[in-house]
Length: 358
Image 1 (cartoon, rainbow, N blue to C red):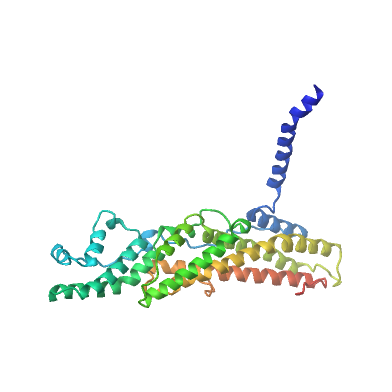
Image 2 (tube, rainbow, N blue to C red):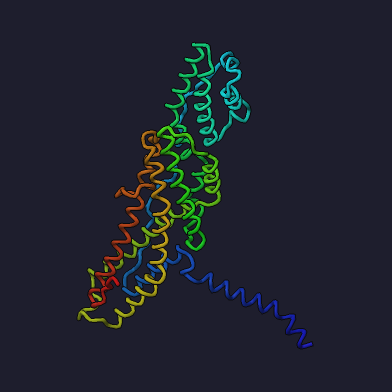
């Protein structure tokens, strides 16, 4: 009976142990970026005898709504008589697909495919058209579509629902252990997409756009760019809070009046190594690495299309994508990391503990 009772109690013991384990994880302030940064500011203020202040997170631009991202495309119509006169040309088949029910609701990438097929088919068809008037109309249609192609390329890249999902701010913070492989894949994907866009701009239509479709499908399953934005916003804000604590202590009261480490300095140094170096800095490095991999090619994707970029998109480009804008998110983030590092160096130097590069 006792043995059976003990055996019966095993599941309950396991449940109890798991509950305790999850409880400990749930109470670990370093388990999540938000609580880690709040705890860091709190501990830093405590050991330096400075009341911590938590500022509002810095402002960040959201990707514009679809109607503010998509460009209007001039219509190029072929009337019914001309359409019937194209009998025997592949162009008639291409135009017929566009005029079907499905063709009238094409997604941006499919519309780009159609425009490229139209241009290629129309060029072939020209040699087969005997009617001078019809040949002139087809030639003009080719020219109009070539002129509109940059607008269509923009819509097929920055005007899509898929890229909006990639950039969404609605899915929390960046988790390196879950996302690093995806970031590498996305980076390679966007670099490939940039090469395709450059070729199309140069008049080279040979690339198969099916792989571009695969790329955009992957964007639907993770808002990694938006998560990096959220993390950079959090880190820049909380690092600034922590830097203000360090500066306040530096200017108000010397940590080591004799210039030599004391008990207080050892406690502060422990926070530096056991909290900042051990927990905060690895996350900073992960965010920086992920952002550099992803946002440099994303910025290029917008930069190479600046000549058609809608005015409503430019604030987002300047503030959230560009690395070379001093007032943009990524510059602010880098500036806060640099300022925080320098503040730590200045404080520890008061005790002869200034960290030096290996």
